[in-house]
Length: 282
Image (tube, rainbow, N blue to C red; front, top):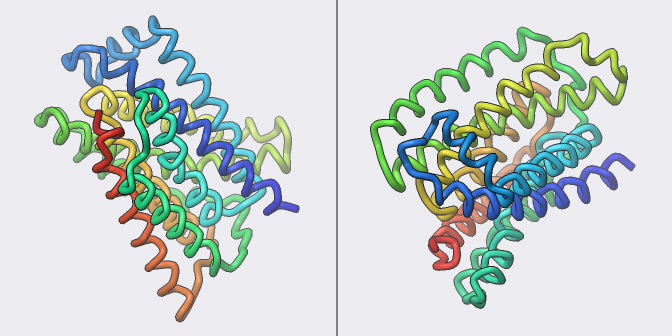
């Protein structure tokens, strides 16, 4: 029953986030670059109905993904949720009145096939429902250190480099946000409103807000060809590693582990191919 809820919810979240990312990027790209990483960026964006629609859809996708994480492990939900680029590409083609090329189809097949191979040999493991604070502290320190290095590097760069650096930092924060969401969702599922007495629900606001600002700054600095593939690579890989390290969720072993590694490589290859699509680079 848990898998029957987690899998379709994760795919629905991916679809919603794809539409939201296209709407947000189109709106953010019209804001002057000088507003990058400033509250002025968000002030400019909230005046744009298209961006507000994208944010509303992002919030909905976050809720749906939280429901998926309440019933399924990170190592299952995040690879499925990371397929949003597969949903975004046809949408971009429709909005630009273009057709998908053979390269686009090849990239999509590689990405979908890689995710399928990874999940096909995944042993189901619910993991720990709620890790202790001492389990979280090393992870929080690592993510904070990485973001502290990446953000100043982005400020010194411009164009595609800036977009890529901000997207990498956003991907790390989103991976952490996924893990915190799983913990908070489990608390609400088991304890109801008593979950508000724990720190995890409040951490979602801080981590989610920082990730949102970095993602919007990345969308503003360059096309989805830079930002979305990086986020779609770093977020699921980071979340899977967090699931194994913090929640003690199981990955495949022995020969099956090699299949998962190859599946991950195939999915990343597909993302790189899609990254070179003229549709995404426009």
